[in-house]
Image 1: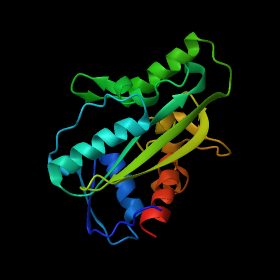
Image 2 (image 1 turned 90 degrees about the vertical axis):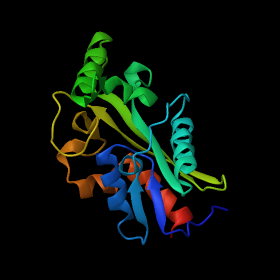
Image 3 (image 1 turned 60 degrees about the vertical axis):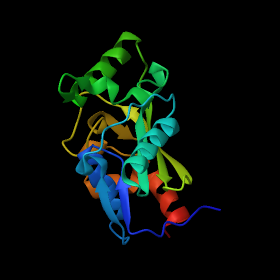
Image 4 (image 1 turned 180 degrees about the vertical axis):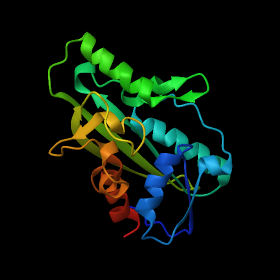
Amino acid sequence: MSRRFTGKRLVVATHNAGKFAEIAAMFAPYPVELVSAGQLGLAEPEETETSFLGNARIKARAAVAATGLPVLADDSGIEVEALGGAPGIRTADWAMVPGGRDFGRAMARTWEELEKVGAPFPRRARFRCVLVLAWPDGHEEHFEGRLDGQCVWPVRGKEGHGYDPMFQPDGIELTLAEMTPERKNEISHRADAFRKLIAACFA
């Protein structure tokens, strides 16, 4: 039996403004005050696990320890079939440059790797997201979502963040970055996980 969330304030363990905006939009119907780890000035913990769940737990537990508040953390990324599931949990690492993250560079690297291995079309990929809801007493709930599709090139669209401009979901002609935020939030991997979170802990 999942634990219901009865608090009024929830820390979202992210320093990514785009990700926080997506999560805040999904929580709009619910009477919960959200604040991000970035807004609180929390340090970003080193993600040393080998799974999305493991790294989400690291972020959740670090933020709980720093604030004493319940925390929602996610770890997510894109897994490209022809690259053996890479970049996967290293999705953000592929974007790292001096001074921050450059996802344009990360997407270009991904396509270059696909070209190197002569990957057939369609170049299948999936976005995965794991959410961890953690309480100060140590209780945790976790939920996973996914979105299947393909990598496309050249990139298309200006909306979204991360790898959205090169990811076209199955059955849709648009990339995630060509969709309105509202449409993306209906179908995304994060929305899939979020629906499970809401049904278990908030509904």
